[in-house]
Image 1 (cartoon, rainbow, N blue to C red):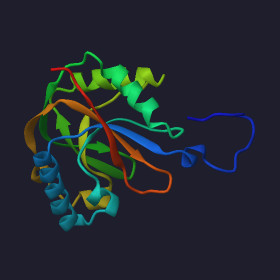
Image 2 (image 1 turned 180 degrees about the vertical axis):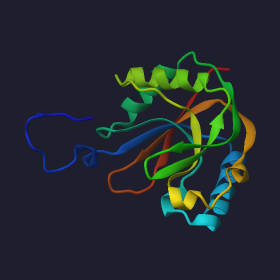
Image 3 (image 1 turned 90 degrees about the vertical axis):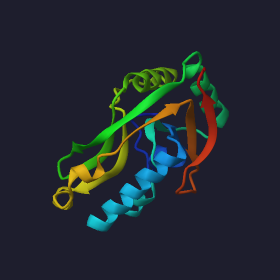
Length: 188
């Protein structure tokens, strides 16, 4: 969130001055472990960056940098998901996003509507607008030449899990790791 005089030249990127919050759907431990194994297989084929290799499987809803106020973020998310019910998420095989010089390898979501609904409700609380293509990333920014060395079907993962919470992560300014600060429960 940029604040202040938009005409004045700033010496620092304001987002670097604030902690980063990430609002996600975190799959169960079994799915996290399965995706971690897919990352290892991919790493053995083409070599992955440490960020790709170590990132924990999740479905992103919103990432933002703002003043350090955990309670503000928690209250916004709780308000957004109030009266939203738990739902099933069906993981439906591997797919890719094409970029100019790279690709992102991900697992498709068969039933994206409940995720898109929660995403829009959360965005509205933060006065933001953006469409979402719900997915679970295996690895991002894989150079096109490296991607030619893999077979997409080797990452064709299918499973289903029950989403009963929205997880809020925080990465302080002086850290490289996100930590869970809150789990907002969905209605039964």
